Image (cartoon, rainbow, N blue to C red; front, top):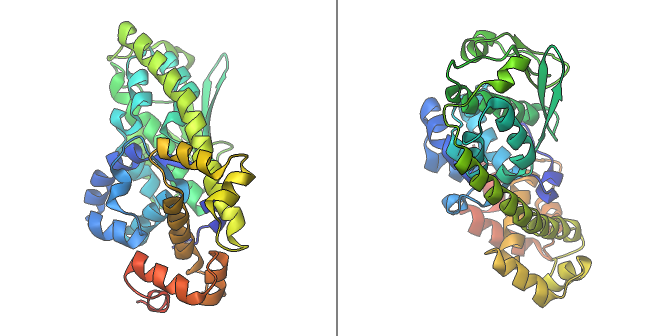
Length: 343
């Protein structure tokens, strides 16, 4: 299984719990995997999906999908995830797209409101006389990027195709990464040429396709949903930026010892009391955020055999190895040494 960069744990990249939870049942059924076992292996609590609007740190989502990848061995995991995208996968973003009058309007709303489903990549559209280029910019590189890119682009097609009366296909689907062994699976699903080792990640569309009406068009609902999406986006930006900033500052301070609420608050320009109040308004607690980040980082550091358990304890801000061992046993039910040498 590829090793994720621990720095991802301190980034602001995220994906909505609604998206992950909507695709997970069908993906696990497809590969005949147990949800309980996969979540346990990834170290992710079922409670993470209790609030659909909650954003899951990207590093945790990637760990989850890489556990599935390790179990199934399918390099097309991202493709299979994208195929199972539904309107509810995107919550408000999905419904504002559904109510759009045509494909062009739907794409415009996707570009404007896509961060409602998480802070991850960026969609761009280039309009030419002969073709439309819809591109997705992935913030990562390497093997994890393959899964994210294929999930995002396949998800576009899975979402939009049923909404078009003639179920029209793109002119081409493009991926910058190398071709998998079974390209035919992709071509059969997209009903279009699939180009690997391409110059961009995205799809090419005929200009006329933008005016194709959607079966779910509802002008009245569209106006209402767009207003709600704008309001949510304003709140989303404020709340997400705060949670991400706290998480990043905890990560930055951790190598110097255990971060405190007051030290993190001071770095962000708040008093400890003010920061605690703002986090509480988002149903967040500083001790839980610290514990969650430590747990995630511990999982990643344990994969690096060059790091001793003492090294890992210090990187996590623990004053003593024994404190790290007690915390790890609480997280995983076994000692760090037992976990590292498990079969």
